[in-house]
Image (cartoon, rainbow, N blue to C red):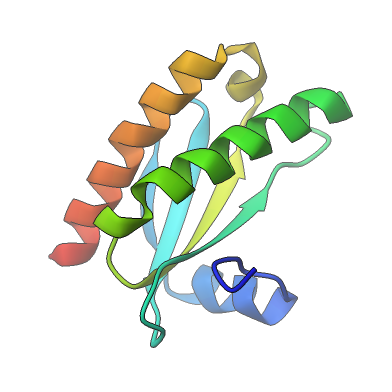
Length: 111
């Protein structure tokens, strides 16, 4: 629970001055935090992914991918925004895409 962005103020903190990274399925925004670990927040609109079971599947994969890669990420607050293409991808494709995005994000935040 301490690795998640939970309140609207946490999300607005990231949106105010974000470092963006994107792909066809996700946009990832990050901002340095003062905590000793990265935190994640996920927003996937009904407008982008209609069915609840598809939204939940994508969120589950994002959380699991973050859990496996959090040790490589700097101390940042991350917001993952889902796009329409995400629901058509398989679980394996989503994992590979997120793996690339975490590496890209870590490189951008290090600069």
